[in-house]
Image (cartoon, rainbow, N blue to C red; front, side, top):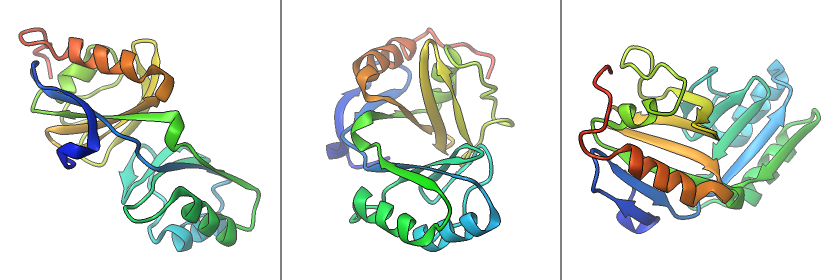
Length: 182
């Protein structure tokens, strides 16, 4: 889990710790997933394109032609976009979405159960493991989330819904309220 100074709100009153991260630099990339484009992405980012429904080295699979890139510490979204633009010769779109997204951390051995209250996703330990990534809904909110470790999940939603999402997660994590089926 990140340094506590990287969070703007933290609630530990429930079964898991719910934390809203401060601004997280990230870039969305849309491009045809051809072999030359995948090679260009690897050259630009220094890491292979992740397999579907996974995240690796800060690059998350969002769709067959879309990736969410967590900008490495010490770099800027503009620098990442510049490298992608220089390497990818096919039509593409790379956009700084840092201010358009809110990022949350769920920490605790019941993190799966908190998300299970609202996400239509199999979150069982055999179906959702560290490195797995899902793009779905949590209640009525479009989200993406991934498992950092067995007891830590990171979630992303639109920034305009950040307070609603924080409150939803805190409410869903209330003690003695979690499902026992996972």
